[in-house]
Image (cartoon, rainbow, N blue to C red; front, top):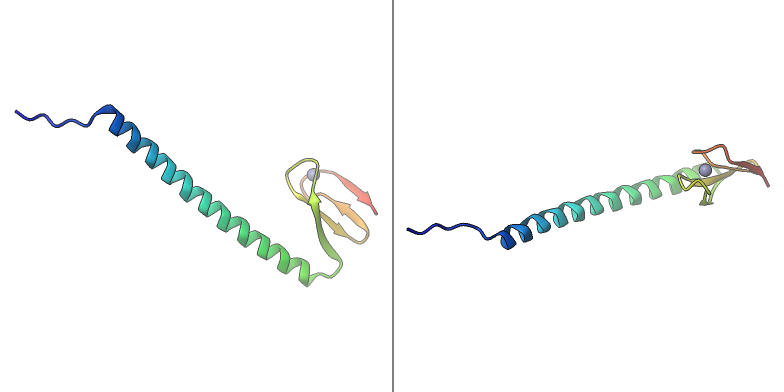
Amino acid sequence: MNHRTRSTPARGRRVRSNRLRDLEDRLANTERRIERLENTLKGVVREFEDVSIGGPCKCGESLLIVRHRTIYCPSCRYRRTI
Ligand SMILES: [Zn+2]
């Protein structure tokens, strides 16, 4: 009789490679989404001449928006006049 059973190490590798492929897919999707958002943001900034985008806010949730001599974060309450 020939009992062909997959060895545990082979199955372990298979699970890891599935997880890796899943992560790679999610990373590629995330990169595409970020690229789309960046292009959209650039387009919006071009449309409105009085708006520009600054560096990341201290809260880490958003980039800062500069408008009408005010710099503010759309995610937290940070706001400063420049
Ligand atoms: Zn913030």
